[in-house]
Image (tube, rainbow, N blue to C red; front, side):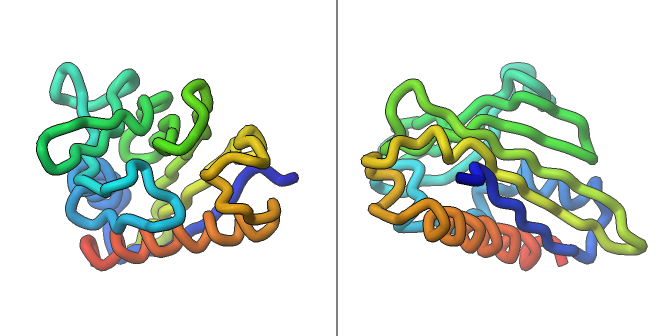
Length: 159
């Protein structure tokens, strides 16, 4: 199985603006999905940093109504405004399992190509609830659709 999906979208924004929107405004534009839920009852996503300024070691969390926080992942690479890499864990993943999301922001004329590569779904066990019973190809198709929708929502925020 190919264990990754790749999607990209051009936005009418600078790489700096697109990077800031992805990190600082994710709680505004992110759209919950019934297939790729991070938690059973969606909350608000945000990146948190111990020093307040960003960087590796920060984390992506979902804060649910009532204040319960679920850690989706940790920032593995931080290179603004060009690249962000973070681990990804859905609540229905086995405890030790994480996949990886790489987001790139590349200037193309007066636009920015934002690309997402989500890799590691080959590590999700075939019987896992995270697969929803889909064979590999269908699972990856649904995952790419999911990320396309997220990028479109982000694009609506910055364009």
